[in-house]
Every structure is written in structure tokens, then in C-alpha cells.
Image (cartoon, rainbow, N blue to C red; front, side, top):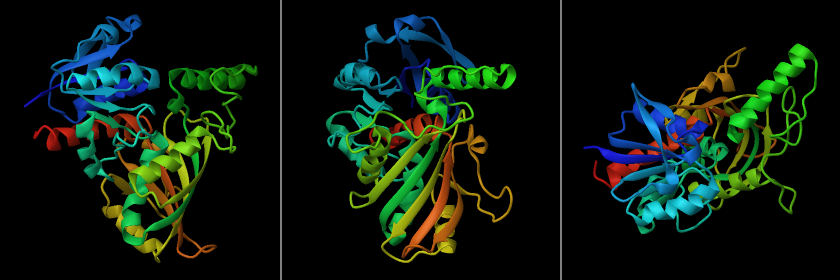
Length: 339
């Protein structure tokens, strides 16, 4: 049995990755529509060994389509996702537009697949923020064993999280500074990103946090447990792909590093690489093109009761966005379509 699947924002980094993963995981597609603005009409996108031609989202009729995977930002989701849903199409949206609506489920399939039942009311499912997605995959199995009281996380987020223009800016700044010796004025970011880090992602809130930091707090509570306290510092780093996170966890119950390591090794979607030697850990470049959420540097925090530290890395374009969306689609096919 196959499904009619539309990918919205098909020409962007995440949209292309969604199409790639649909082919890679052999999702049962009977017909695929690649949708974008009319500026991209006629563009051909690889879909496995085939190619699909981009169609105009503005004139597309969603009636009779089973799934729409949106990877085009909040404005597009606001305008077109309800239209698709009203026509009976199940929408999986990667933007932030629906994430904080209590009537719309926010799902990471390894963590809270049961939330899918809530999707029947509106035919819309939200995909979490990329930095949240990898963190909750690592936190959830530990929470089941020892109940997490508090999380302190510092992120090291790649420029691909800001889109193609930011990736181009890192490349141009690096080339100009390293090869020519000329500085380049930033455009995508408020400060130079090449050979630098920027402790600022998204806009600032009244309390001094940024919206990215707020997202991690709110989304973790929605996906795992509203009782978990989360505080985050989100930093943009000069890496093209791959988000890293240094996570400090305080538990209600005792949990030593050896047991935590064993739990994570058995958890779905996680690979543990944790040897106490040079290179015995994951780095963002190692995660590129991989589907796993990697965990390294698992160790006790002796400064608090029942504390652990760990290092978490994932390809943000895959697990943080495209792969999670496709995994939700697979969940929908099994649980809602009976496939």
C-alpha cells in the first residue's frame, strides 16, 4: 500500500533531506509532490534514483493527499497547513508555528508516540526544535529510570540550523579571512561567525533569555514531563552541520554513570561512544549524514546529589528535523492509516 505524500519547502535544506530520507527508508509513497514557491517551478530534486519536479504550493490542491511534510517556516505553515488539514491530509510541520498550541501534539517517536492520538482532532502534528529533539531522545530513557528533576544545557549549534544563507556566510567569511586576510561584514548573524562563537540564537526575551533557550524549556516539558526544570544557553558555532550539547542532569533518584551508560545503549535511536581516551567520544563532524543521537562523556557530577553530565551530538538536518518528520510519518502510517 502506498501513500500520496507532499513535501512543502522541497528546495530548502530540510525539505531536500526529507525527500532523501523518504527514499532511503523506503517509505511507501505512491505519489510524491515537491512543493515550493513559484520561483522554484521546474526545479528537479533527486528522489532516490528518480527525480521529482517542483510544483507551486500556492496553487496546489491537497484534496486526496494523505500526508504533507512541511519544511518551509512559520508563515507558510500558518497559511497552508490548515488548508491541507481541512482537506483530510495529515500535516507534519517542522516550523515553530504549532509547537506551543496545546491542542497540537509535539512528537518525538522514540519518546512520546502515544501523543499521536491527539492528532486526530486537527490533522496536524508538530515537529520539535532541532536542539530539543536530540536532547529529549537522550533524556527520556534516563527519566523513566530515575526521574529528572533539573536539566542545565549549553548548546553548540551549527549554522545549518539557520539555513543556506548562514552556511554560505560561514564559507565566505572563512575563505576571505583565511585566504585573503580580509574581514567580512556579517549579514546572517549579528556578529562574525567564522573563527568565532555567538551566544545568541533567535531573538531576546524580556527576561534576558533567547527564544531558542525558551523553546528547549517548553518543548522538553511538553514531550517528556512538565515537572522537569530546564535552563539553557544556546550558542551558534562555526560548524556547518551537527548540533552538540553539554547536558547536566539532576535526578530524583540515584543513578550512577555505569547504569546510565547501559540504559542509553539499549535505548532506541541512541548510540553511545564513551571511552575515556583521546577520540573516545563523538564530534559534530562524525554525526553528519547519520540518523543516531550520539551520547559521550557520561560521568557523575559530584557537586549535586544524583547528578550526571553527558555530551550529546546529532545531525540537526536529519534527526533534528527531516528524519524526525519521516519517523512521525511512519508512525502515522502504522497507527492512523493501518499501514
